[in-house]
Image (cartoon, rainbow, N blue to C red; front, side, top):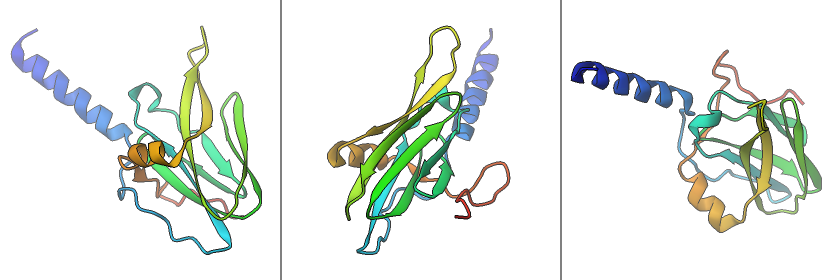
Length: 152
Protein backbone atom coordinates (compact mmCIF):
# COMPACT_ATOMS: atom_id res chain seq x y z
CA UNK A 1 0.00 0.00 0.00
CA UNK A 2 1.47 3.34 -0.94
CA UNK A 3 1.53 6.37 1.32
CA UNK A 4 -1.33 8.19 -0.47
CA UNK A 5 -3.61 5.16 -0.15
CA UNK A 6 -2.79 4.77 3.54
CA UNK A 7 -3.50 8.47 4.18
CA UNK A 8 -6.80 8.29 2.30
CA UNK A 9 -7.81 5.19 4.25
CA UNK A 10 -6.99 6.85 7.59
CA UNK A 11 -8.95 10.00 6.68
CA UNK A 12 -11.95 7.94 5.57
CA UNK A 13 -11.87 5.95 8.83
CA UNK A 14 -11.69 9.16 10.87
CA UNK A 15 -14.65 10.67 9.02
CA UNK A 16 -16.66 7.47 9.46
CA UNK A 17 -15.95 7.35 13.18
CA UNK A 18 -16.78 11.04 13.65
CA UNK A 19 -20.06 10.55 11.81
CA UNK A 20 -21.19 7.98 14.38
CA UNK A 21 -20.89 10.22 17.43
CA UNK A 22 -23.67 12.49 18.63
CA UNK A 23 -23.35 16.03 17.36
CA UNK A 24 -24.94 18.73 19.48
CA UNK A 25 -24.43 21.15 22.33
CA UNK A 26 -21.91 20.11 24.99
CA UNK A 27 -23.18 19.02 28.39
CA UNK A 28 -24.90 21.56 30.55
CA UNK A 29 -27.06 21.08 33.60
CA UNK A 30 -30.81 21.03 33.09
CA UNK A 31 -33.08 23.50 34.85
CA UNK A 32 -35.30 21.41 37.10
CA UNK A 33 -38.32 22.57 39.15
CA UNK A 34 -38.00 21.99 42.91
CA UNK A 35 -40.66 19.26 42.88
CA UNK A 36 -38.90 17.22 40.18
CA UNK A 37 -35.73 15.18 39.76
CA UNK A 38 -33.38 14.86 36.84
CA UNK A 39 -31.94 11.60 35.59
CA UNK A 40 -29.06 12.02 33.18
CA UNK A 41 -28.62 8.97 31.00
CA UNK A 42 -25.34 9.25 29.12
CA UNK A 43 -23.35 7.08 26.80
CA UNK A 44 -19.60 7.61 26.52
CA UNK A 45 -18.33 7.21 22.97
CA UNK A 46 -17.21 3.70 22.09
CA UNK A 47 -16.76 2.68 18.48
CA UNK A 48 -17.73 -0.97 19.09
CA UNK A 49 -21.37 -0.12 19.73
CA UNK A 50 -21.70 3.03 17.64
CA UNK A 51 -24.41 1.65 15.33
CA UNK A 52 -26.70 0.73 18.24
CA UNK A 53 -29.25 3.25 19.53
CA UNK A 54 -31.83 1.33 21.56
CA UNK A 55 -34.66 3.31 23.15
CA UNK A 56 -34.13 4.34 26.77
CA UNK A 57 -37.25 5.07 28.80
CA UNK A 58 -37.41 6.78 32.18
CA UNK A 59 -40.93 7.26 33.46
CA UNK A 60 -43.07 8.33 30.49
CA UNK A 61 -40.28 9.73 28.31
CA UNK A 62 -38.17 7.89 25.74
CA UNK A 63 -34.97 8.85 23.94
CA UNK A 64 -32.51 7.08 21.68
CA UNK A 65 -29.03 8.00 22.82
CA UNK A 66 -26.16 7.69 20.43
CA UNK A 67 -22.50 7.23 21.30
CA UNK A 68 -21.10 10.32 22.98
CA UNK A 69 -24.60 11.60 23.83
CA UNK A 70 -26.77 12.19 26.86
CA UNK A 71 -30.40 12.93 27.64
CA UNK A 72 -31.83 14.64 30.73
CA UNK A 73 -35.05 13.00 31.88
CA UNK A 74 -37.07 15.35 34.10
CA UNK A 75 -39.25 13.10 36.28
CA UNK A 76 -41.65 13.44 39.22
CA UNK A 77 -40.25 12.77 42.69
CA UNK A 78 -41.41 9.18 43.04
CA UNK A 79 -40.16 5.73 42.21
CA UNK A 80 -39.14 5.78 38.54
CA UNK A 81 -38.22 2.84 36.36
CA UNK A 82 -35.63 3.39 33.65
CA UNK A 83 -35.19 0.71 31.00
CA UNK A 84 -33.27 0.10 27.83
CA UNK A 85 -34.20 -2.66 25.43
CA UNK A 86 -33.04 -4.43 22.29
CA UNK A 87 -33.33 -8.23 22.12
CA UNK A 88 -32.87 -8.25 25.88
CA UNK A 89 -33.75 -5.59 28.41
CA UNK A 90 -32.16 -3.99 31.42
CA UNK A 91 -34.05 -1.87 33.89
CA UNK A 92 -33.36 -0.09 37.12
CA UNK A 93 -35.73 1.45 39.66
CA UNK A 94 -34.72 4.76 41.21
CA UNK A 95 -36.21 6.55 44.18
CA UNK A 96 -36.21 9.88 42.38
CA UNK A 97 -36.14 12.27 45.30
CA UNK A 98 -35.41 15.89 44.35
CA UNK A 99 -31.82 15.40 43.30
CA UNK A 100 -29.64 14.43 40.36
CA UNK A 101 -29.15 10.84 39.22
CA UNK A 102 -26.68 9.56 36.63
CA UNK A 103 -27.04 6.37 34.61
CA UNK A 104 -24.37 5.26 32.16
CA UNK A 105 -25.62 3.27 29.17
CA UNK A 106 -23.17 0.52 28.28
CA UNK A 107 -23.19 -2.49 26.01
CA UNK A 108 -22.16 -6.01 26.93
CA UNK A 109 -21.48 -8.54 24.22
CA UNK A 110 -23.13 -11.95 24.27
CA UNK A 111 -20.79 -14.77 23.37
CA UNK A 112 -21.26 -16.12 19.87
CA UNK A 113 -24.10 -13.81 18.86
CA UNK A 114 -22.04 -10.61 19.06
CA UNK A 115 -25.18 -8.61 19.71
CA UNK A 116 -24.92 -5.58 21.96
CA UNK A 117 -26.76 -6.13 25.22
CA UNK A 118 -27.67 -2.75 26.71
CA UNK A 119 -27.17 -2.03 30.39
CA UNK A 120 -27.99 0.97 32.58
CA UNK A 121 -25.52 1.42 35.42
CA UNK A 122 -25.91 3.95 38.24
CA UNK A 123 -22.79 6.11 38.53
CA UNK A 124 -21.81 8.33 41.45
CA UNK A 125 -21.85 12.06 40.79
CA UNK A 126 -18.05 12.55 40.86
CA UNK A 127 -17.31 9.86 38.28
CA UNK A 128 -20.30 10.85 36.15
CA UNK A 129 -19.27 14.51 36.06
CA UNK A 130 -15.92 13.58 34.57
CA UNK A 131 -17.48 11.32 31.92
CA UNK A 132 -20.56 13.34 30.95
CA UNK A 133 -18.51 16.47 30.23
CA UNK A 134 -17.39 14.89 26.94
CA UNK A 135 -20.97 14.08 25.88
CA UNK A 136 -23.31 16.18 23.75
CA UNK A 137 -27.05 16.58 24.22
CA UNK A 138 -29.09 14.13 22.16
CA UNK A 139 -31.48 16.59 20.53
CA UNK A 140 -32.95 15.05 17.40
CA UNK A 141 -33.58 11.72 15.77
CA UNK A 142 -30.78 11.41 13.18
CA UNK A 143 -33.07 9.64 10.70
CA UNK A 144 -36.01 12.05 10.72
CA UNK A 145 -34.70 15.21 12.36
CA UNK A 146 -37.69 15.04 14.74
CA UNK A 147 -37.35 15.28 18.52
CA UNK A 148 -37.06 11.91 20.19
CA UNK A 149 -39.28 12.63 23.19
CA UNK A 150 -42.42 10.56 23.59
CA UNK A 151 -45.82 12.23 23.35
CA UNK A 152 -46.81 11.21 26.91
